[in-house]
Image (cartoon, rainbow, N blue to C red; front, side, top):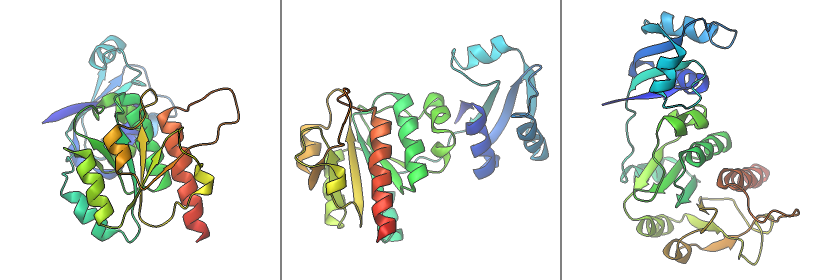
Length: 245
């Protein structure tokens, strides 16, 4: 199977991590600036065919999305299976996981993957249903993180949270209804941070399996943050605490 990806960072990341997946690359005619020139040289060095096409062709292929003048036709990335979560837990002494419950916007999924990569999270877990696809939009927003962070789709999120608890992973959910905030919580050790959707938050069953609920203290007039921003805040607080230990 094949798919398209677009955007300079997304193409660069795949070229660095898995160049064998490339089938063809399509470049905007006349586009040869300082950002694309090094990438074109690397593509040619890897013997990847580069086609010069019009902006209209690229716009149609990307369905109006911002492609930055480059689209790649690639083989679909390996999909992680649920049972690989067990392998991941045995490979990491203190795994840091990000769980997304009800995140249906590919932009938000891509941004969360980017935050997870930056914080060194070992995987992002999402339910198989009612979850954003890892499509070209998500991969562009992820800026390469879609190629480095395992995305594990699970059939039953509640069952997988219970599985994590049985493997001594603490489940900490985020909710504005929590009675304390993340700076008052211990975010070290084996940990799964659960983020719900901005409008509805975590589902009832997801909340049920959380060992603790935390909030992000808000000093301004806004009551909520974009889910990717909230994920970044929580992940990097965990990183800060881990480094102190």
